[in-house]
Image (tube, rainbow over all chains, first blue to last red; front, side):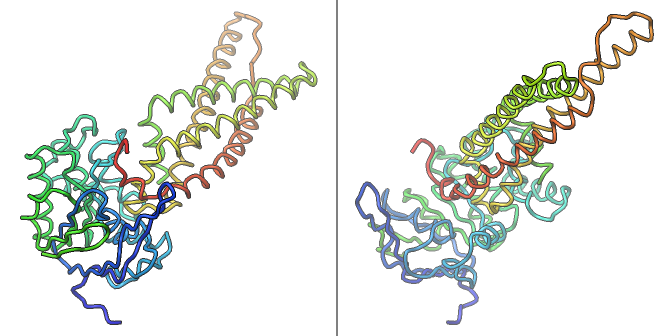
Length: 230
Length: 176
């Protein structure tokens, strides 16, 4: 099957079930989805509707029980663990709700950590990290440890880590879930800016409806199904 | 990556200091008992003590490996999420364990050198305190080589535990 050049991710007939306490939970049911290159997508729905599972499957963190996930022309549902790691390192930037920064490392070291396993020189890694910190307006905090940063600042460090390797796609799971309204606006506007300036595809999972204004497309989910695409 | 393992070890000051001190004491005691064993001063009990110290080292290494992987599962899961392979993480954890043991070795060598220097100086100044050179260099090197071999067993455990860390753990909410 030919893969359209402007399609970044395509999910075809995806199904995923979990067993929890003896019960079978249908997390994803017959999901079909096309994400174009450079799109800003928000996946929305109530808690437990399968939106995080969808994000995990689209990024190769979790495998579907059936169906295919074509990521940048490659079926990642069949990729080896090492191949998936490389795809994530080269093409995907993750933003986590809980920031997931290493407390013993400074802000700049947390960002640099993504590039440690690469062949880039220390100087190049440092230059890229400084540029990423500048992009999220946090350069003056580069030597601070996560405990010395506010929630919003931690998330901006997380965002800098997500863009340092110039990914094709940024996947954000409730990136503003722990933030106050002001920090939420800062983070969402930064995501939008990265999306516009670099034509990076952005997929944000959130239950906050007021964030829809940032999206080109809003995917609404319920009980594991896509119920509406706006 | 090895340099980054050293950076990570040094940043976890408390745990690093505790394990370096324990390794230092164990390496010193094992070397001392090997020295006494070679000199025939302790008879068969020297072998018994040496075995105890090496077994302690093995248990300690397994404990360190467990702390590094299990208690930091979320860190390694995050690293996997952002593109680290299992091999990358094993290099980091192995580097931390081997660096900690090596520091114990260097501290023992350093202390023994200073001790020997003081004794030699006092002897040359005709101040004879009648104290022996505690441990020669050879028993320390033998001990350190055996300790590093013991670490390799711990690294096998690390390897199996790292494989079990799923990157998806990084996306789970803290406290959920």
